Image: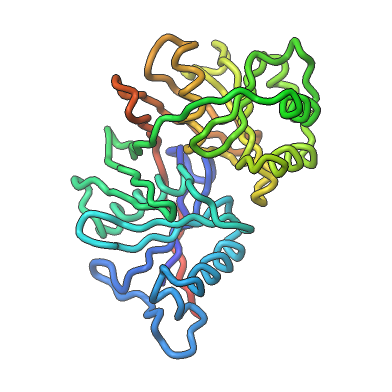
Length: 305
């Protein structure tokens, strides 16, 4: 059984967001993969990836890999692949960059022909459709709906980010992933590294069951050919800051499409060390949000246990 490491939302190795990808299949074209049914293998539970024991092994592998997320996929039938995502600490319901990375590996290894789309089914029975669009992996997500925050939620988030009232342009919570969204001025966005409190972000997220906190702003001419900038904080999942979070962009689209007055935009997730570009397009009937990006397979390793 092999582990692939893929840098997602970038065309440059060692940038974007790294994801682990494990293909739970007995063989790929032209090669034989370690048989998880071998007697004594600690990977033996993965022979039935739907079992609780397999979930425990997946979590241990994700902790060992220690990337923001590791995805596990297996073929369910002729039209669907199952996919599950794990951070080093917990299972994640939905992960955009790991979905993109997994699709890239399935096409690169010829497990799926490049001209065929891929339909993933997540652990929560969400269907995610992927195809190739001018060299980019395109994923289709459900649209998000934004809810208003309570006064206590607003206070906690402003304290966590050390914001003044004049810094804040909007505050919401998305229903799709239960992510907070705080839209701030450009100056406040630039100050984040000096004033963000991970402990207070974790407390705010855990109090309401939020997955993470998105902080966003409009881009300027100095940022190049992008429309918005964002960052994503989720210390409660064992990831203080995620480099590029594809699944956060339906939430960003719900806010910025009306603000920008157009259905397509380019986002820069502005992590201090590993930046990535995300291409967003909302269907004319608002039925889906297409999230696209490039990816690079940077390594392949084999499990020996």
